[in-house]
Length: 329
Image 1 (tube, one colour):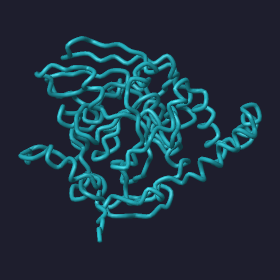
Image 2 (spheres, rainbow, N blue to C red):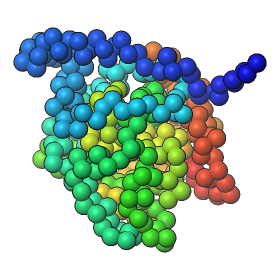
Image 3 (cartoon, helix red, strand yellow):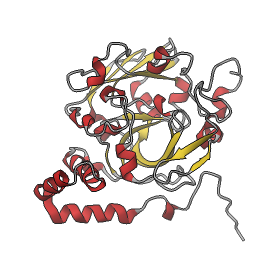
Image 4 (spheres, rainbow, N blue to C red):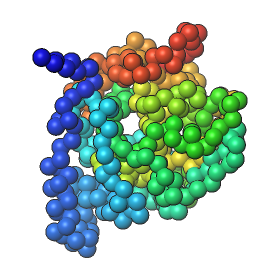
């Protein structure tokens, strides 16, 4: 008799997505039509239903909406319940729009069409492309990932996107490129946080080439089977699930291949608290709080933090022989 032993982060497919939730919302939308839905959202503004319907409206108007939902890759799942869509789409860090968590409404001001993506630096030839063209060239799939914020809260999210390696392959970087530097948009007219001069805008992040081509590194374009809403980093963002959330840069406009390690946004602000690597480790506390446990959004349950956020088997080898590096935080 064949006995399958599940790894610690696996769960059965039936537990991964609450399809009844999504089906119910689709039924509501079809029955109401967009005009009626707008009225309901106005009446329910600030409430759970209003927030969910607002996200549905934006997704339906997206010119890439026909690409979703993408097929799920069963290799990537976790042993936790999926975080409710309301929490994922309304409890966000996006400092371009403010330092509080309730920035989802302000983020709707971000114009995401047209959206030009530039790939430059140490590449065979620079590329400039519109997001809508780029996403249609990529192998979209859905992956269920853990997400761990440095602030010690966590969620489990069904992201849609494509492996970062696919973009790296398209870019054809030179062999001398050692890092991938990423930058977000710069538009202080709609993003009030970018008017604060003490922040080193635009938001900048970076990975080594080995990290960027690791199978877990993912460029996200959608969530919960829909195009990504602005507050979650539309139209495209990075997800590297073994690292703290601040490494997961949102609303990317430029990918630069370089041989110099970039200084990242939070590293520039607080080098004693936030470093380049930012790998999740329960044994290394933040200077102002413990990382030994985390609070799950939705349930509020507090659970132990896992090394590399539960992805040790995928990524520990990236850091072999680097004991002298500040790999965590």
